[in-house]
Amino acid sequence: MMIWVPANMIYTFKKIITMRNEKFKDTIFTIKCEKCGNEKQIGMKDINYFGFHKSKSTTVSANIGLVGASYTKYSYFAKKFYCDKCGKKTWQEVENYGVIAEEYAKLVYPIIIKQLIILAVGSTIISIFPN
Image (cartoon, rainbow, N blue to C red; front, side, top):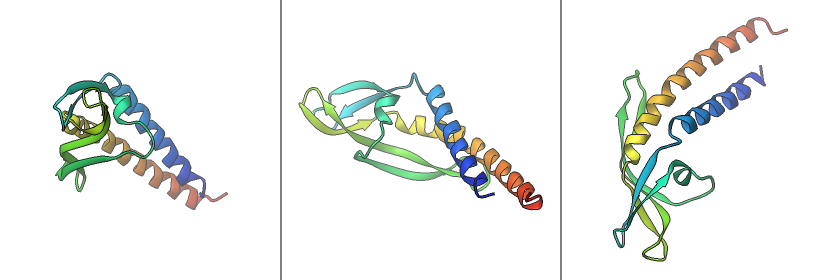
C-alpha cells in the first residue's frame, strides 16, 4: 500500500501535464510591457518554463460547478520577460492568461476527482486483501 499512493500521484501529475501540453500547445499569449507599452506574442512554453521566476497577479476565487471546487480566477497576471524596446527584463502583463487558466481548471478537476476515486477504491481493495 505504501507504493500505491505515490505511484497514483505520479501517474495523475504526468497525465495532467500531458493533457495540458496537448490542449494548449498552440496557445499564443500577448504580453505588454508595463514601462513602454511594447506588445509581443509568446507561446505556452515561454509562460510555463521551469525554475524560480517572478510573477505577480490579482486573483479571486471562483466556483467551477463541482461541489466545493473552486479555482483561481486571474484578473491580472504579469511576469518578468525581456523587453526588446527597453533592452532589459521588465514586468509584462499577460493579457489572456485568465481565460486559459479557467479552461485549464475545467480540464484538470474531473481528472483529479476520477483519480481520487480510483485511489480510494484501490486503497480499500489493498487494505482488505493485504497479501
